[in-house]
Length: 319
Image 1 (spheres, rainbow, N blue to C red):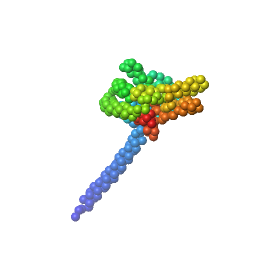
Image 2 (image 1 turned 90 degrees about the horizontal axis):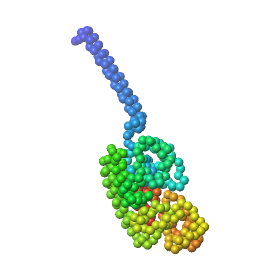
Image 3 (image 1 turned 180 degrees about the vertical axis):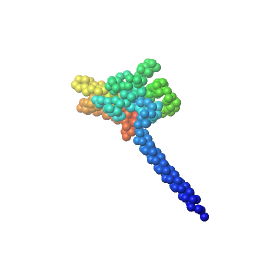
Image 4 (image 1 turned 60 degrees about the horizontal axis):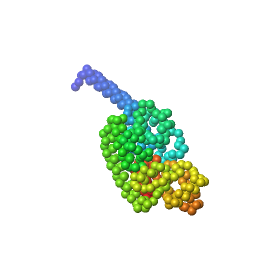
């Protein structure tokens, strides 16, 4: 049996052990609480941290057509902003939105078509980051092509040429994307070549070889000339009347032109007036499916990429 001294000593040790256990539990609770607080602080600041460390470039383009080209070549990582909204009609454009202005102010790179067809260029220059690099397609291509077409994207052949030189420019200004650019360019060029073959086969219709199509915007001219279709552009944006209207309808009759293909992005007032007056004068005109040549649509309308737009255009012309 233990004597009284031993029992007292054992009891003192047990008290120390119990006190140590209590301190350990309290310490663990404190550590857990600190970790929880730090986790919460980190979670709340994730968006801020991302915004501070995200070094992906901001690229502003003239419109969704160029926007699609850049995304195809660079992938989804960079932020690419087209100043023209998808499906936007080009008559009476609204001022740039706050979102577009904010993108211009922090832009690392801006890509224009050039040749006077960048609808927001003058307004954009007032907000553009002075340190942004600028690529103008028309100026680059003029060095390699004797007569670079204004609406070059309406021919997959010209589109492919542009992609080659745009790829080189992007590699200069965005060197960390050189591998991505090389891989994506090769794949996309194959898609563009396949598009050319598809359009060629779609438009290989005997009736199109003997018929001239009327349109209200010159952008269709390049698509037509590439694939052997005759096109005449009349009344692009203006209303004509009186002697000028009578002369135009007389020429349509003489040339047996009775099919009009309107442009999706410009006003049809001029064409509607021609159709109405032609009917009165005994020369009925059929209005075909509109061609998209100055903008892309959203996904719901099926022309949300350059390739989809051109495939729909070819089908629409045949229909």
